[in-house]
Length: 182
Length: 322
Image (tube, rainbow over all chains, first blue to last red; front, side, top):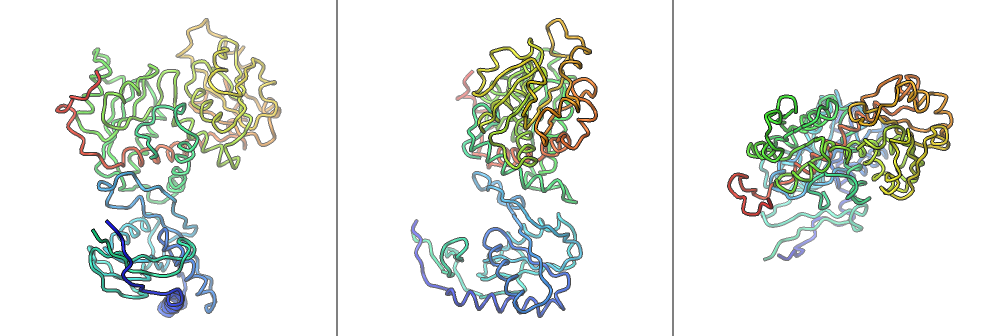
């Protein structure tokens, strides 16, 4: 099986602009950002949440705290994968009770990661509200999950993969659509 | 976990494997502080907890670790078991295996029993203490406590005090810490620190003088005086207290921030003085919490792995070695 790049979905500049827009949308729709906190899902959701927090800091007064969520322990595909994924741990150093949380991830696909993330969050307490922010929504949901804040919606086929490549984790900055060819 | 299908002892693990287990225990340390201590990660999995020798804390720790990961446990305890009726070890564990657990935790008074079982069963085996051989999860939780309290595991001066000869805790700790460059001093009455122990690992020395052993120590591991294992003419308790009890006065001979560990159960006033056990240098209660974290990490990686369509044990015995 070969993997070929089909087209670029977002350039570095477009990623930057999209994140700026998402940061504004999150603040606008959070009535004063009271109790607002961002939760990045490992790994790329963490980088994106980090950038969103920095962007928000640029135009909004209250500092929005950020936490990191490792969903490995909450996956539902345990019996189908070989070795267990290595744990990196959840790092949320504030109580989530009564918080207004925005969960951040790179790609929304089946919705299973978000299901796992919700389980993880609710083990920590009872947030007042949980919303979802993703850079790319590629469809093909298997669970009733939708994002409140979406960077770009993309039509994809089942065999295609959306790869979000970020400077911090991948050494380059773009989003590409790749396909598996037999 | 990096080619690890059982946890039988520390001796055969690499430094990398040990570091990996300790790293994986970290999220579970955090987890012990969660308000809701129940995961569904191992839901539907069953862990057989077979203790052929009395134990409370290790058994509770493994059972709790499994429960917090969402696994069920089936327990076998020596007192209530068919061992009393003369069933062999292998027949007992095969009976357990036929109930299709996904892993087995075993404690046995014979050294090598977990390895014997591991060779004959298809499921992961975790050693919870075998004879005077090893107690790997104890050494791992001790290492985790050392790393947390002292910032790293490498290169400490470690003093192990007490009945080293009969102690599997001591053996596992010697193996583990020496892989990380520790200089280890074994100290106790002469009959409990025989010369052979020096061959366990490099940089192990012995002494019968507690004051000498404690000087410059960064970590002091106090062993329980295991009266039930003593076969020699017993040493009088008063004599032991006088020569080997870890008192506040003696602890001052070690480094100022030396860490004191004890695997428990502690006999206050015998091997350790209350002032030390409850003092700021004691890591005893952290050891207990860290035990849960280490055991959760091990169960997660060993039991959680997808089964390779294992045949029913009663059907496919063609590859059995016995």
